[in-house]
Image 1 (tube, rainbow, N blue to C red):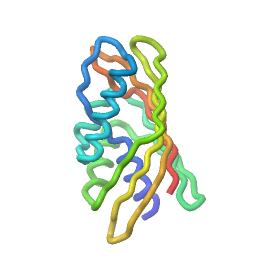
Image 2 (image 1 turned 90 degrees about the vertical axis):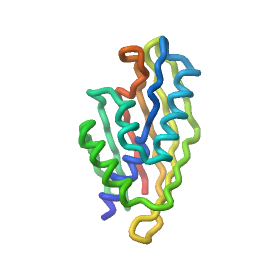
Image 3 (image 1 turned 45 degrees about the horizontal axis):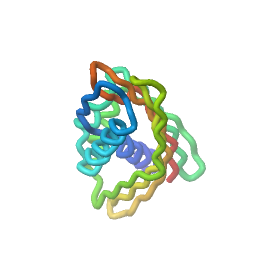
Length: 155
């Protein structure tokens, strides 16, 4: 159960949305993208989240639950499935992103790091978690997309 909750927790963290069109990657366009991701997460809109990931996105989930560590590398399609399954059972979901740091690498690429806090009720049990998230955002066909995400989840 803990591993399943951890996976669903991460999936929620990875909930990003925003058909953000941009000519260049800059702090303003990245902030707009991240705010839209936050909204998709709050709405538990798995399809929106996936639409803001490149087709070949690299997803790395480092999960530490009760001293047990595991690394999961789901494909984009598997991640969509995991999001839908997880969000189907969440109740009273709360999400917040803090300590966001944006580094613009070029007009086409940025690195974003954030702290994510979430809480939810699953089977009448309150689950809380914290993660550190690192993303690579790149301009692909004039759209900012997530091309890599690495998350370190503690529960």
